[in-house]
Image 1 (cartoon, helix red, strand yellow):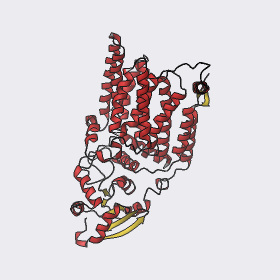
Image 2 (cartoon, helix red, strand yellow; image 1 turned 90 degrees about the vertical axis):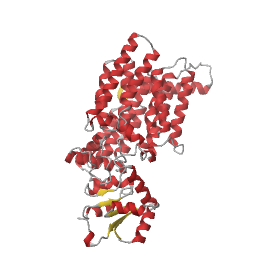
Image 3 (cartoon, helix red, strand yellow; image 1 turned 90 degrees about the horizontal axis):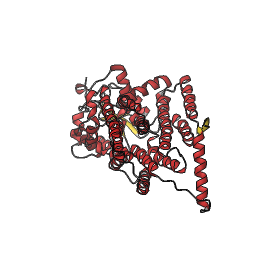
Amino acid sequence: MRSLLLPGPAALLALVLAARLGMSPLKHFDLFFHLAGGRFVLEHGFTRVDPFSVTGTAGWVPHEWGFGVLCVLLIRWLGAGGPALLVAALVSANVLLLWKALGRAASGHRGLLALAVLGTVLLVQAPTWPQERPFHVGHLLFTVAVLCVQSWRAGNNRILWVFPFLGAAWANLHGSWPLGPALLGAIAVGSVLDAPGPESRRRAVRAVAFSVAAFLAAGLGPDGPAIYLYPLHHSVLESTQGINEWRPLDLNLSWSWAYLALAGATLFAVGGAPSRKVAILLPAAVLGIAAIKVQRHAPFAAVLLALALLEHATRSPVAEAGPAWRRTVKRLDGALAHWSARARGTPWPALVLAALATTHVMNPTPVEQGVKRAHIPLGALDALRGLPPGRVLNPFVIGGLVSFFAGPDYKVFIDSRNDPFPLAIHQDYDKLVWGEPGWEEALAKYDPDYLLWKVENPGNILLDNLRARGGWREQARDGDYVLWVRERPAATTRP
């Protein structure tokens, strides 16, 4: 008999994550361009013209606008705790649903192997947890898609109706949305290869049709049909290749080794299985290889590798007269499987989140008080807001901070949205940062009124160059950042 109050392994972990992440201060720079964009959408609606810069001439595609709007609404209701609670809820729900999906792949036996696989997947995903970014939505919706295809493989045809709605919602929340239709289509093709026959083909054709419907439903958002090519367009931009998460798997990062260990264990399990299931191996192989080329895909690929491992793992019976350590492992495995089968405990993470939400409703914390001050130069931003609107020369990562805390009237040179800015802007930015030939022309072309810059290397290069030229004065200093104001002759002051 299952107990609603007894927490299982995943519920205990979700409980810890809900508390830890739900009480974290806001700290990731990308959150603030989402907040700035969400606030702009709520106040002015959608526009293709970038409202936050004069250099973003490639056009603004707020494809993750839903996340920004949701965070802004949560801030209005809960204060600075809103985005943190959203991340905590998304991560906790993902852990719980992953455990459910792994249990299905293991034919209901959630023992030591299933727990080890869950732990490895979470090691791959864990570096994303402290970041208030929309890929948490992508991770959760991918797990939902996995559960849906598992249900379809088990004979539930009606579950396919979830995919068009999933595609429409996902496309407006995170750029990983093509993975949903792709997963369903690959599973459908693989299922025909696993069990050829008229009925299998009929079900597969129906699933592929819903996969296409899910893809087309993504165009129901404000971007319209342009969203269909946006993920491809973004991934091939030369400027995108310089972003860490779009680079090949980095073996200097410990989670990369966890991913490779999972891939190796999957190959071992598949090689030793009496038969192979193409339905799961096809998407796992494609996405698994893609993750080596682009490490951003690894948290998704790890889920499919885990499912493939558990579906192909064989459990050998252990004789009573076998080695003592084998008997001990078998007893532990049985005890864990029994605990997992009896436990549910999902209300506990929800209760923690509800308690934190209640606290924030009763006493909302202003955003300025709810950020990690070591990361966010609030003093310099406040000083900037007290100056007349103008153009701001800023580092790549803090453009969103300027747009949110100072407002869209303070036009940033660049920010980490990346794609609104043509390649020439990225090249000019590199010249300014590193003092490369042409940096003075880049400065003159943009003609900034303010400089909000980091004093640490390589930021000191531009600061030293501007000191040598003169014409700037320091307005404020906050930690590692300084705010400089351009000293213009009265006759040349920009209106």
